[in-house]
Image 1 (cartoon, rainbow, N blue to C red):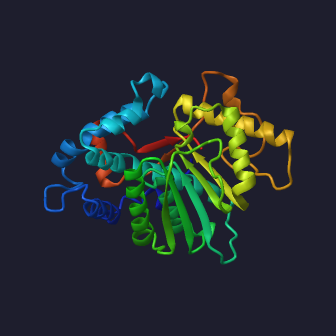
Image 2 (image 1 turned 90 degrees about the vertical axis):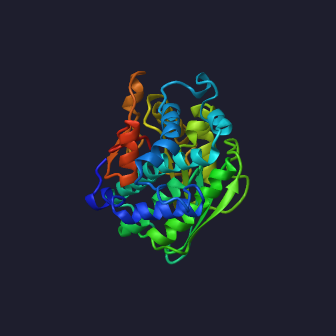
Image 3 (image 1 turned 30 degrees about the vertical axis):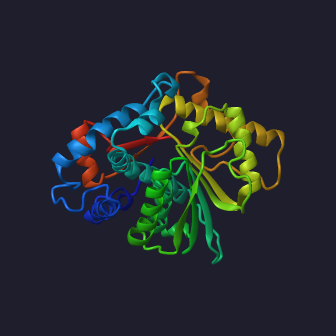
Length: 331
C-alpha cells in the first residue's frame, strides 16, 4: 500500500510520544511519582512491559486457532497477575500500529478519490471490538492528515467492547487524542460495554455513516456465510446513504482467507437479491470479480503499510526482537 511521506512520519515527532506518556500517567499506568518510569527507559519497559508484549505477540500472531492455544488471549487476559501492566503493554504495543493500519485504509480511499458528503451535518460512527479505540483514532488521524476526505467537524463515536477496563481506557484515550492531537474537540466518544452478538450487532438505533470493525471478525467462530448475512443485514438497516463499512483484520493466512471468504459470500448475496441502495465494494479489490487468492488453498492476500514508528515503539521492538517497521493487515 502506498503511503505518503507526511502520513508515514506523522507519529515520529516527540509530541505524539509525550501525549501517550502523559495520558498513561494520568491513567496511573505509569507511576507519576517515579521519574525513571518513562517510555524512554529501557529498564522500565523491560520490567513492566516486555514480558506481556512477548506473550501477547505469540498469541496474536498465530497460525492456529485460539482453541488450540490453551485458552488463548482471553485466558491470559483474565488470569494476568498484573492487569494494569498488561493493559499498559497492550496499549503501547498494539494501539499505535492498529491506529496506523486504519489510517492507511483511509489513505487508500483518498488515493482512489473518495470524499465524504455531509453538507455541514455531524457524522455518526461506531467501532466494534474497539479495545483502546485504535480504529476510531485512526479515523480521526485521517481526518487531520487527509483534509481532502472532507470529514465533518463534529463526529459522535460509539465504542463497542466487551472488556470494561480496556473500554474505559480506550474512551479516555480517544477523547484525549481527538482533542489534543487531531484538534477536533467536537469528536466525542461514548462507551458501549457488551459482547458483540453477530446475529444482531445492532438491535436498534440510528443509521451510521461509518461501521468500523477492528480485528473483531478475528474473535468470531461463525462461518463466512453466516457473517456475510449478518454484515449485509447490518448495512441494509443501519448504514447511512454513502456510508462506509470498514473491516480491518490480521494478515495471517487463517484470518486473511476468512475475510476473503466473507467477501465472496457477500458478492453471492448481492447477486442473488440485488437492491438499488445496496453497498458497493471499494477496496482492496474494485468490483465484483472472484478472488484469485481463494483459488489455491495455500494462498492468501494482505496489505503492508510502511511507517516511521514512534520512538517508544522502536525501542520496544528492539527489546522484544520484533520488527514493525512494516505493518501487515487485511481489509
